[in-house]
Length: 322
Image 1 (cartoon, rainbow, N blue to C red):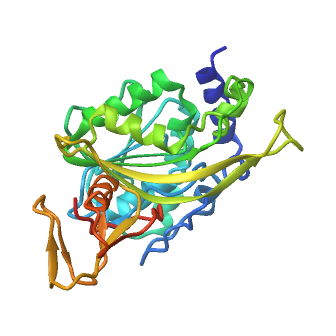
Image 2 (cartoon, rainbow, N blue to C red):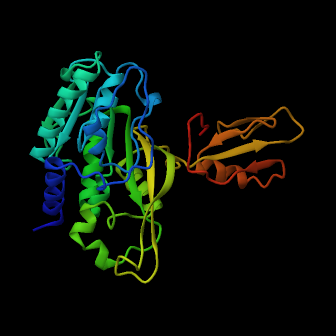
Image 3 (tube, rainbow, N blue to C red):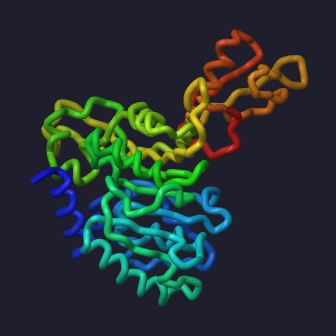
């Protein structure tokens, strides 16, 4: 049995009997006007963060969500795209698709605005999505891709890139680990299926996205998630796992490399009203400007004593200059 078969078995069981402790989401459930979230969906929230960000969801976009879980994020996405098949949910586990479909019956009873036709469920694999090229505005996955090993992860990201329209957005939430994950844990099929031992360092995670072709990456949140301690696992020291939320945008790749926003800002406090670096960046006097890491490095290399570059916060909320 492969680790992917083990994953299917784990989530088949979680579909048949909701497992509240399977994942530990680190983001609050969106409270939106007129949205009632069925209890069963909350119990089947098998994610480690959130992929629902209203700023991505204007103008009733076409949305793809891979790994449907109990349907919670599908319902949240449909709140912003109230049209037939406005949200497509793809899953390889028949039992999870059936459970999600049944949960939408309850959601329709609790929400007078919701129609089950807003969500189209499709049987399919993240490595071979049943979705047309360049047909999706926003694609998302929550705590799924970290299960994959490198080769499968690359294929899953390529598939997401393929189905997105130009400037479309891939929003993801996954566990990461900046320590070296012991090999015996990486090869533990159950731990990988439980979204623990497949965690990779943040810089590798971001590089996987940019290698596929995403020209802009936003790190929107980084929070504590789990600890693999010697008390419970065969490790010599605590292995710290964090939850990462990112948005990768299908922008053209800049000639000088991708724009990766990690929450840095530049502040110019010189004598002039503004600073123009003649590379497309204008900093107003004493006004913080969000910048990508590449631009932050370029400004620092100017060697000026009137520019302050803040450290990464890993909570980028838009408005950046690149």
